[in-house]
Length: 382
Image (cartoon, rainbow, N blue to C red):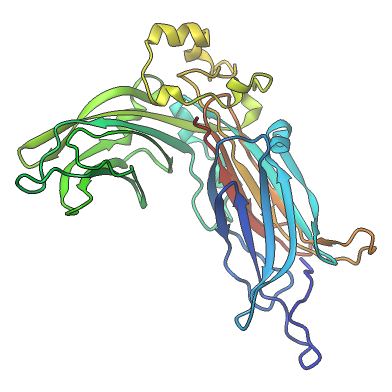
């Protein structure tokens, strides 16, 4: 709040900055809406992102004044090492914005864990935490690995297809790379989907020919069917992509994980593999006996509050929630900092293969006002 006014001029003293925030996590960028003519903006917006490693990466927030007549001017910036968030579990404080005369950002950041317990989907904590958010908070994460497809049909006579597979869950659609001129493509591609409610949702797979754009087969997998499997996962299971009377076997691995607060779990951050894992479990199924030996009692980890070990059975995820409100105060020139507040909350991490973070902006109790930003970063796959 109390942001620096970049629109004030000799001819017009009444104009104020039109601020918006840009959030960056790795190569992923997010942008809030612009709040016109306001030095104390309230964004109340949520974003989700995927992070492969906390070490060496930062959550970056930049505030700009939108200018329709020229280049947007920076109002301040802030960066927080994700490793600090991971180790702290929760961060809630006012941060001074850099690169401006005044402004603060109040952030509440939390790290969340991944769990194999489907009962966590019934928790009301997400609605309570993000009741002022503009988007729903996802209580679960679906990881999918599309291995291969066999015996795809020809889109036209004597025309070998160049296939790709499109995956959709809700309004989110992702796709594999195109494999040129083959009816037996080997994709070995990983995907992440945030899940709001497993009931009634389906993971839809459709194969297409890149040249003709003709459909080569389709398959629907109910999320509830994955949830009902042991540990909410399926390994290297063969399904059928159906196109008319033709069917093409497709090999898929899928894993559903719920988010849980760190208060109920013990984290193993001393072992890098326990924090991130390699994600190989999503690519190749291992024997259940090997998994049990590696995890030393994996099935009871969630209920007994023992951290999951990094192996083909575990994932880690973190949710970075943030609420922002800004306020400007004069600072000595030696500090040249600005004040816009943001608060971020709840993040969970459980040793495994995914680091998920949410950053969200929310209301602040201080009179200066508030902004809600949420960014979610997660999932490390080698």
